[in-house]
Image (cartoon, rainbow, N blue to C red):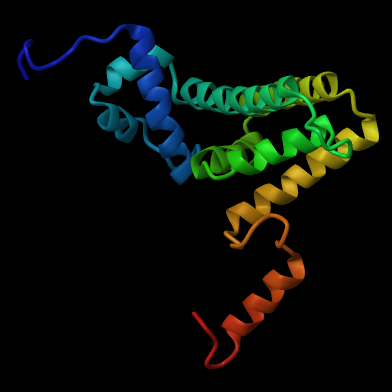
Length: 195
C-alpha cells in the first residue's frame, strides 16, 4: 500500500479497532484458543504492534472484558436514566432487564461474558472480572434503588437469560424454559428425530 491509499490512525483509534476485532475473536475462540496473530491480521497490524498497544494477550483480553462490562453498565444506566414509563408496575429494574434482553442480540458480547467467567482460572482475569462485576452490581443497585433481594433476583435472571441465549433456544425470553429445551432435545435424540 502506498501513503495515498491508507489513512493513518492514532494509537487510540488502533486500540479501539484491535479491541473490536479481539472481542469477536475471543468470543469465538475463548482466551486460551485465540491467537494474537489472528487478531493482528484481522485489524491489519503486525503482531509486534499489537503487543506495543497492549503488552500481552492477557492485557488485550482484559481490555475486551472491561469494555463489555462497561457497555452493559452503560445500557443499564441509560435505561435507569430514562426512568419508569407510564405503567406504574414497571420498575427501573424492569427497564434495565428489557434493555439487557435487547443487548443479548449482540452474540459476541454475550459470549465474551461467558468466556470471561470461563477464564477465571487465571488469577488476573478473575480479579478483573470480580472488580467489573462488583462495579456493575453496585451501579445497578444505585441506579435502581432496588432491595438486595430484588438485585439478587435481577442478576440471577440475567444469568439464566445468558444461558438461554447461548443455547439459542429461539423464541423470546418470555417463552424460554428448561422443560421446553429438554423436550426439544429428547425429540432430536429419538430415532427419526428432527436434527
